[in-house]
Length: 124
Image (tube, rainbow, N blue to C red):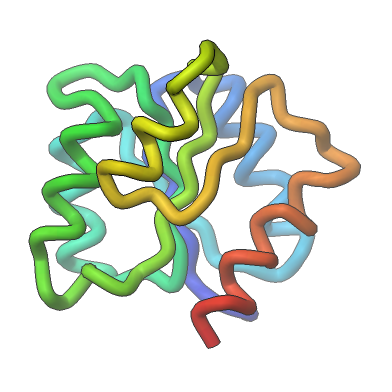
């Protein structure tokens, strides 16, 4: 396995596609279906990368990113927002709360892995 990736995503279809692409590329994928579960899983796993939806139940992705950045053990873990929030200012807001990158939904299966791996390379 290349590494551990935590996907925090509440839409089962989106999660299925992301998991399929990542696992096909050799990554171990862990999934959480809401913001709080994502924080709990990140604290337990210490993943190599977190892919974070913004519209989540329990706690939105912005609050999740802020919470993860406040944890010294996760403060340098790359977080990439993967979201349909594509209005003017959404990318900036995601970056302000601690995300390292931003991928718009619907994802492009042909380019998704290259976009994800850019953030894994930066971390190494």
